[in-house]
Image (cartoon, rainbow, N blue to C red; front, side, top):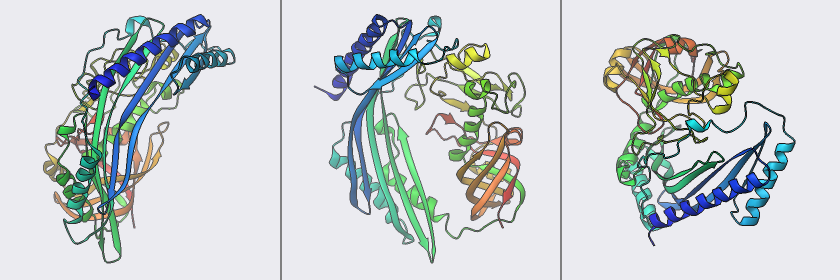
Length: 447
């Protein structure tokens, strides 16, 4: 039996179990119920300094049920799919519901919004990989970093992960859907020394399709180059300067934007973007499109975690906020309709106007290039922003020297409106596809 057939059979078996749980919930008096089950199986291998540090085989999953009775809600979960365990889990959820408060906004998503026949997004690309093959790939990646330069004196190792699994979702509206998926990654962390100074940096690749991962030797070399470039870092004098966020950290800026337009923060009145729908949030050159159905993409999904069908939509058009990000519950709290964002966003494509990385450096001129962010000093209620950072000082469009032990600060309102340019150097390794960002001015605290 092939691995693919095995996973497909497991998925069908779990669908039958989910159906059984929904029937049990109805028998026990639930007005409505929803059941979600995920399973993951695969291999993770870590090497360090040429030795195998860990080999982990994963095969786990859990089933969760939520029942609704007269506006009350109860949830329970189990990793045991035996009939007796499922009965106990449903009974536990029903019992919990008896003691919760009535909430008119709770309940299943509206039936007409559900994905009853979701499309196949080509997310499942399993790789048959022996432990020995995985170890050799990780070792080759790390060896490339260690042999790149004599200043690479140590390593935090290389890690290869190869996983496949599936998700199944069903509810008492008659929806029962599921799909298999895969995710593979290879990473390397290098440590460099020069005198008493030590620096640490990394490189990685991630993809649904193992054969589309970057070459391991290339990842090792990239990790070495990244860490070497950080040696002999300096502090900066305190002051206000233009700031460029490299593409791999630029997505964090949009991550704060996501929090500010998410329904949970909006109905609790804990976002600085309350009542911002239809208003200018970013400069006119910026557009953000959501495309949930990109084939093979890391954040693609035909339905959200409530079974609601996902759809293409504009989040920002010419700088104007077009939509909030809502679940069924937050939408009802706000008197709106869910946008299919239970569980997160799906492939944001951020427009660019600034050219490639080198062109963006030229546009920055003289200022700070941020390549690492530390700490979580961001307040979504007020918009206050303050985080530790490291990167490079840029003069006349050229990288001059590395910088460390600095803090960058401002407000998200000013950061959003102070966007000057977005690069075409798009990072495809996450749910937000953006290039580097240049902010007109931020406060930098150093010496």
